[in-house]
Image 1 (spheres, one colour):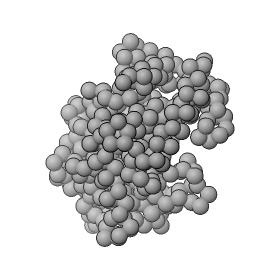
Image 2 (cartoon, rainbow, N blue to C red; image 1 turned 135 degrees about the vertical axis):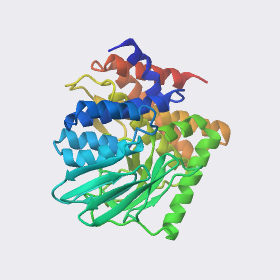
Image 3 (cartoon, rainbow, N blue to C red; image 1 turned 30 degrees about the horizontal axis):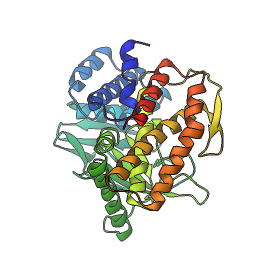
Image 4 (cartoon, rainbow, N blue to C red; image 1 turned 90 degrees about the vertical axis):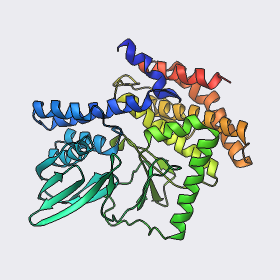
Length: 380
C-alpha cells in the first residue's frame, strides 16, 4: 500500500477532511471506469468519457455502484443503463441500444424505472429518455448541473433542499433485518402522497435533524452532505430490529426510520454516514485482510461477529459519540439522548476499543483509520 493511501486514512475516519468531495469523485470515477471495462466498452470511448467526467461532481452515487454490481454479475445491459445515465451527467450525448431481457428496475437519479426487452437510452444534454418503438419516455430533465425526475414514480421523491442536503425517497417497502429498499424485491410497494400528513411529519422531522446537525455539529452536517445523495424511508417487518441501514451496492444512499427525538434521528444519519465512509475507504484498500477469520463480541448484536463488522460498528460508535458530545456541549441532551451517549461510550471502552487494538488481521490502512479515530475521540 502506498504512503499516499495511508495518509488518506483520516478522510474516512472522522470529519472534517478538506478535500473529501474531490476524493469521493475520484472514487466514483474509478468505479465507473471499472464497470465500463467489465462491460467491454471500447477503450477509446472510455478514455474520452474519462476526460469528460474529470470535472463532473457528485460521482459518489448509487448508479455507479449499481453499474459495477451488475457488470460484476455479467448483466452488462442493465449495467450499461446505469453507466450511460451517469455519463450523461458528464456531458455524454447520443443514444445506445440495450436489451435487458426480463423486466427489471433501473435506478435513474432517484427514480426506479421498470425496463424490459429492447430499447434505446437517449441523452440530448437537456433530457434523458427511453425510446422503444414509437414510444418515448423522458425520465430526467437537466437543471443546474443535475438530473431531476421528469415522471412521477410510485416511490415518492422529495428533492434535496438548502436544509436537507439529500433527496428523500418514501418507498413504502417492508424490510427485514439487513435488507435495503429495492424495487426489484418490492415491486408493488408505494410511497405516500406528498400531501400525506404522516409523510409531511416525517419530512419535517428530518429537516429538524439536519438543522440540528448544521447548527450544532457543522463538521458532521458537511460529512453527510458529501456522502449521502438519497435517504429512503421504509417500513419494518414485525420481526425486524434494524431501524436504518446502508449497502455497498448503493453507495451514496441510506435508509432510516424516524427515531423518537430529532437528535437521535440526526445521530442515525451520522451512524449510517460512517458506514458509507468505510465503504468508500474499501474502494481504495481493504481495511481487513482477505480471508480473516477473527471474530469479536458485538455489544449491539450480543454475539461474536467478524472483525470487519465489528470495525464498522466501532467506527460508527466513535462518530456518534463525537456528534452527541457536540450537541451536549452546545445545547444539552434530553435524558433519553444522554442514555444513548452513555451506552455508546460504555461499549466503546469495554468492547470495541480493545477488540480493534487486539485484532491481528487489520491492514495497515485499517489501523491508520482506527488510530485517527482514537486521536479525534481524545481531542477536546
